[in-house]
Image (tube, helix red, strand yellow):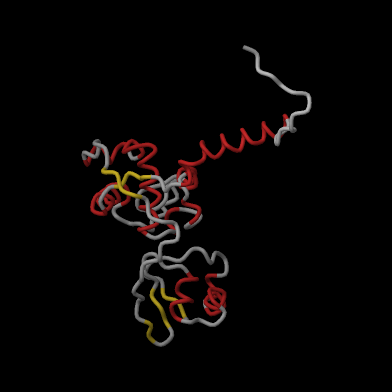
Length: 200
């Protein structure tokens, strides 16, 4: 039986273009809904990451040997950026241990232990990691204990940045104030090393 369409029926609320827009919006909402939920990430224990870092870099989270791989877990710059490392630092060796582990867990979820082929085999890291919920993006930063300051000097600790040192010690002028008091930093203020003494 054919459906009757009267000549004087009320116009549709959606014309042809409106229907397309409405359908597209609905499809986008359905497809995008899973993206709004925090994804589950694969995680390994901190001890496992420390063992892997010991194998990859001798346990030095701040290592930069010039071989094209950086940090405790020896990230290439492209892998570091691809898994969100740029939100922490330009290269892995400039990020804290905890930040490197966040990026490593993202890498592990996508590539598995094969991202670290030699050391993962050597350490027997071939089984799937235990799923763990990814942390909320606005999580509070952990409290970092500062190295003692004596006579205006500060000894750089692992995970320090000039900005964090300036903030922790109330340096006037922020990180630029530290650079002004330490002219050797002017050439590359992003490069500080553990054990380096700075005048505050």
